[in-house]
Length: 360
Ligand code: SDX
Image 1: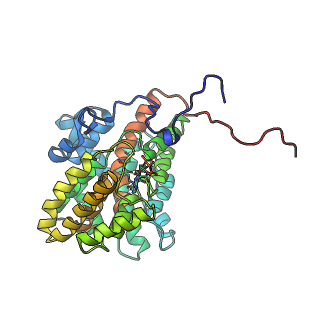
Image 2: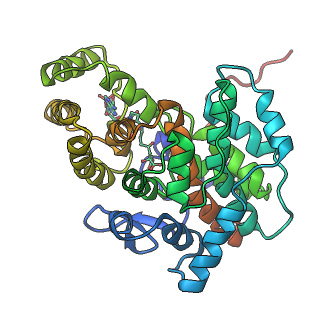
Image 3: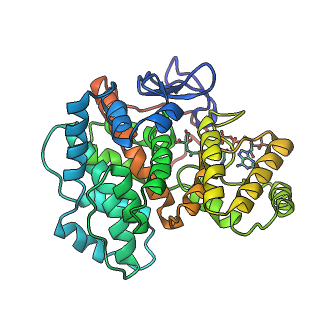
């Protein structure tokens, strides 16, 4: 170990490895994007306006927002070759694996890094929808001339219901960015080698799949749909804790008391559950959240309520991690640009604990 090296907790827990001006949590524990509370952006702004803010660091004026929205819309389709690549994917391929594979190969126009990153981000909804439909032997959907969220919601469900799309848009905004989370840090490590934007996003797409990170939301639905009452929820928690197994959708490296995003989605979910006549599912979810807090003081994270919310919006669980990735691809764009703007290769030291002095 180099002279002067410092040892830090495993997992870099509470270790500040760099500065960022993209996101943080404010002194009341709220997630902020470029100084604005994420929940305020979800309530009051469009996905496009928030994506511009996160990417470029300030709110767009009218013409900038129109130009940005038009750029996303005009770069949202994939070419025939990319469709052919998707046709080669074996049945049963997970959509997030297909997205990672396609992004790593699809042709992109040679232009500034921000535009390359935004072109990748713009295409993920189409790749998600076509990939899923091709893998499952279904016809791909035509395009829909609408906002980013309305179009994405249509590509996922075939529905052009604007009220559902607006609920979906609020969730998308909350998924967009979260400081140095695992997939973003994977992107920054790759970017720090001066690998290109596509390679860096591919690293992030690989990292987000894990059940400790972006793969949690789909796991939540698997267990939530098995529970028909609050009593069953309590028993589920008891059983999992007795076996020392982790319950997906709970806990967070930063939020130890509550995840403000989860509480926002929980409030929206209460409305949505009433509209969809699914109050029972909402009651079971709040009972499970209460049991986890009473037993372990572990809060629900965004993925817990997001999974139930997307289910009530009629979205197939195959799309849950892809939805997280599609929105987070704008946060990744911002982090790539920030990393390369003041770069130093990310290469930590390690403490060797293996054998020495051996001879072959
Ligand atoms: C996301 O980083 C981000 O910002 C991520 C994210 C984003 O926007 O990018 O917010 C999105 O990934 C949310 C997290 C989704 N993942 C899950 O829901 C998976 C389940 N959660 C856990 O695996 C866990 O809570 C983590 C990984 C999210 C955080 O874990 P830490 O900070 O590494 O803490 P830990 O695993 O060391 O747990 C501390 C204690 C342990 O108990 P002890 O061994 O000390 O007795 O809390 C327990 C853990 O066993 N614990 C849990 C638990 N999470 C932590 N026990 C049961 N169920 C859980 N979910």
